[in-house]
Image (cartoon, rainbow, N blue to C red; front, side, top):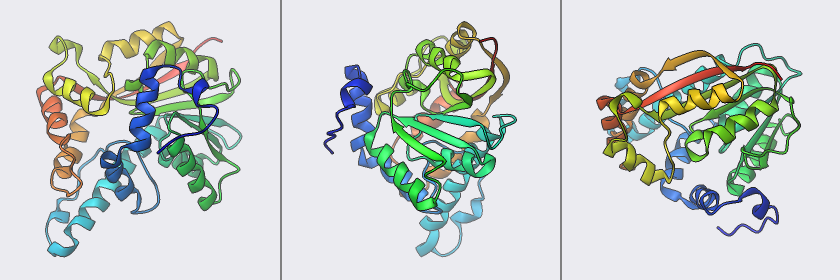
Length: 290
């Protein structure tokens, strides 16, 4: 799809950013997973799932097997978003939150429903912005949940305006030091940042072939685990919780291999997780100082 927004040149400042935006504007294969799962209840996510699946979905009438599988996969990805929101801390209706790399808006809508506060989503995909804002209108929350065609490295929002910020599997597309510098600027003192991400495991001594395959498939640059903490420390973000979700996400990927929606990326994810070269982490950190 061709984007004609005159703001494109100011939001997408590098050839890499333009290529990432083009991927999420135009890639029908991966979008097929996201859209099919979102059709279950109208919450469209752009991340993976956690938890113990109900394997009875694999039994029963064959003609409804795929429908049961899709519903269960969607339940697991919504459980992941719920866990992320659990770590945002004390959020009040008068607060403001930001979703960095908001996709089609699923977690943003869940945050507004839970906390009753304003949520701003930012993404460099113009298609995603339009889709998510249409969803906000459809849900009757367009006055509270807004999506913006902006770069999360330079949002243009005012300093200290956010009580909480999260990224859900989007940090692998940006430089972490630049990202956390912007997030630290946006957060009020004592504000909370929550991240769920896949990262390479420094202990194994370098990138595995499976991690490199994932990078190539999504056009991303998966960071080592240590880089998250170094970038946070440099930008006044102090971790309060770190949770290894690797074991909790493997069942999601195993179940996805059984679905007609499988894209072929399932095998490298499972290999990397099982061999320990790739980890799925939740990190919650507080902004200290000003």
